[in-house]
Length: 216
Image (cartoon, rainbow, N blue to C red; front, side, top):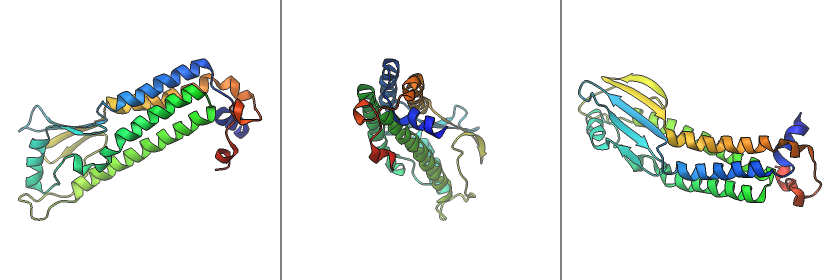
């Protein structure tokens, strides 16, 4: 089983169908840069139409002024792009993933597709972890001198919750779905070309993973 998995992920070259899928996956990473990744909607009697915050890979957008006025009274930090410094890096990460995926489509090496998939998975896990940490800090680092005293809390990264008199809904937006489709596309490319994994070429020119990568 492990031998087959090694061949599936690292040996041989991708077929034409797989390369076309990788081109689409690479484009998905670029498209995701322009789309919102996450959204929080807060609804109360005072704001029946809701206050919204959307996180893009490069900016925050929404009813930031109204939310920051509320934050001032309860001692929460100002919500702006400076609160998420990683937004300066996300566009570069997305673009880098797109370029590497297109490069993989051109070269056709299975091992390179696997490396890009691993990098994309790690970037997704790290981004989600950072989001959870930021939300925790947002609700726990409260100003003790604020006019209104509230208990520390954490806005939910996903789902529905009640925070004070606000009904809060959070979800991962279309940009996250498009990025995930890019990763799924890489998996699909490896899968549709799996018959080639039965071949174990003996040299790097035929698509085998370099020994330095296999020994990591």
